[in-house]
Image (cartoon, rainbow, N blue to C red):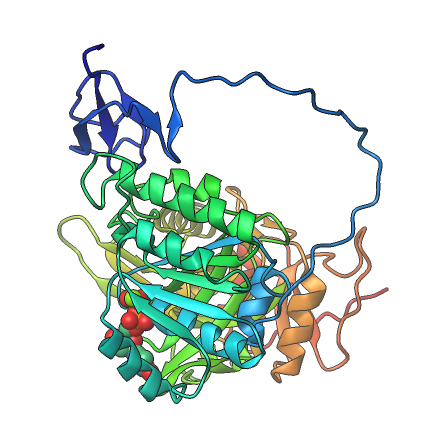
Length: 471
Ligand code: TYD
Ligand code: MG
């Protein structure tokens, strides 16, 4: 018999190397390589060197009609929106997120909703006991919902039991990292185990036709724990995010083979579980206080949804040492760039200040369109003049201080008008350029060509002669 081959597997990304090294070459994580015997069998029990005689496959052209996949709505609209209209039968969805963010709560609520809608739902937890799940169900008021519960980590038992439930519509596994299969010889929780367990569950979902919802843990670095490879194996990857100090939770689509990604669903964690938030802008602006300097409202976009959020900024003098830049909810590199542009192009003196920037409500903003709002908050903080409370801001800023167009201006303007804002600071020709867009009647545009215009708008402390768009 051949000597077993040793390989080294990265516990963060799952990459395999022939030699040990202190740092994983693939994901650059330190100290994550662990020795492992190369599996004689691949995940799923396939022998490495076996090859059956293949039969001929028929090749077809690109043209053809395929109906859209059927959907099973979970009846939780915010969840369905992110999924692209509901669960697709025989598809696999992975929900990742930090511990304690509410994944189990969300999936139990979805299970109960689908159970009430007539689907056969199986919920298997490897993390909690039956009593703990029942207690949660009682708290959520879901004890009467038809859901089949089990608490186990043995994959063999799970697969054998699922085979007895041929009409299962949804199977929830909480979490994939706790599942253990004896088809591979490695420790529970190792990359090989998780990959093999996922592979076997996915195969069962595809052959039996049930939708599979997997919970996946997230590592300190923020990637789905261990097996990044799982992201490639599943059809849909969702991230459940939020700040545990806030009650808002955002379900974000990261990958979706059946729909658009970058959709978000917004929830609020209450005493009775997760409640849907149909108007996130109103929620994110609820605690805004007018007449304080260093705050500006950004007309942002999350997927296809406009979301207004407050950007807050605080400057505190730091004449000695190196000043601090602390950012929550935005990119710190982008903040440094904006500070440099404000200093060199607009002559604002910010270098002797600590800068604290915060996106209120715990939302994470990734759009460059937030530049203008951040700049407005910074200028307002530096000049100690509150921004116009009835104005929203959006626009990308270039290195020479020029304003650049951003996508979906019409949606942003509509949302601002809906929430009662009267003015929008935005790049020039937002409404008159190539894409003609409708500006809501109650909203006037303050067109900004260069960052110095914004300094004048903010520092003057009042609304400069609003320029109505000339069509
Ligand atoms: P949980 O779903 O267990 O998180 P995860 O599965 O992502 O680890 O939710 C944990 C937190 O949610 C816990 O700290 C308590 C809180 N929570 C509520 O505030 N209200 C509720 O109704 C429930 C069920 C949980
Ligand atoms: Mg949990």
